[in-house]
Length: 382
Ligand code: MN
Ligand code: MN
Image 1 (cartoon, rainbow, N blue to C red):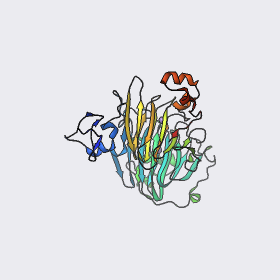
Image 2: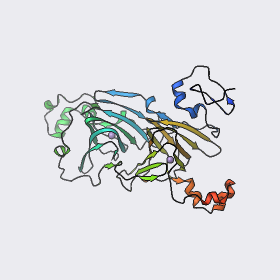
Image 3: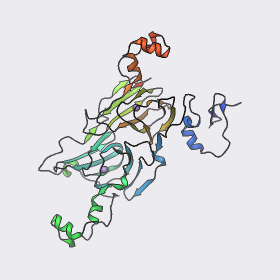
Image 4: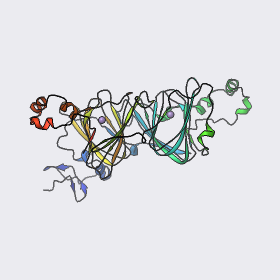
């Protein structure tokens, strides 16, 4: 009897002498990408909500100057706290001047762009951002994005699972639905000067690559925004551990007042340790590599999911989890929280800082094993 999870290169729903060959209709590409759904670890048990959705399964909105797609609560129903958008702007293309009810956290995946915003006191912000840079625009604050000469792809995360890029407030849409004589009166223009106003939102559209940042800056009489909306995450010195490294951006070092994030890199053979978060749900975006996450929901319930670049993962508040790199390259992902500060609880640190006899008696282990655990936090272990 053949009981391998993979036989002759074909993944099969079987393991440990149980299950059987799938000879019927199947989506073999998805089965290959989700080996822990097809043949879950024997420790998985019970019915848990779906905690994975790939941007590759999302609708793409194609526009004159680029494209965008989103993974929100509609795509991934458990993801109530945060929603994400993947957007590409060709060189010089704009994401038009707009605002929204949610705060926006951005991470540049590739290329570079110029971002601008003006706050409620007219204080302004204009910066260029490149791969690995973050931005944060508080809710209601108007802003725009324009790609520089190499174009740009970025991830946006919003602090509401029901957010949609398709329902933001756009200046062209606002003006198209305001009488021209009102616009003229408001701005001190003449109505006949407004014949070329767009009839509907422009959203993403082509423009010219702008010149140097210095020449583009506008002097506001009320000054610059009091705290910059930009943060260079990749130039931040990472916390190094045996299995990889972590960079955290939260209210302690960045102006993001509602969203905290960690950029985690797990080297081959490493794992993000068994842990949970004591304040809120976790929204994940995978950047490179291939790995799996096991999620423990109490009451004997556990489910395992596989992730690769472009996938979104989600972990409900307090659920225990680990993430294991199953590939030969660095598994790199963002973990994000609708919380100003980043917090996690380590199973190992908890045990190491509790009288050893307590864990030894609970887990039927010798005291010596517990006493050998390091007392400091090690989020990524090898
Ligand atoms: Mn926005
Ligand atoms: Mn976590």
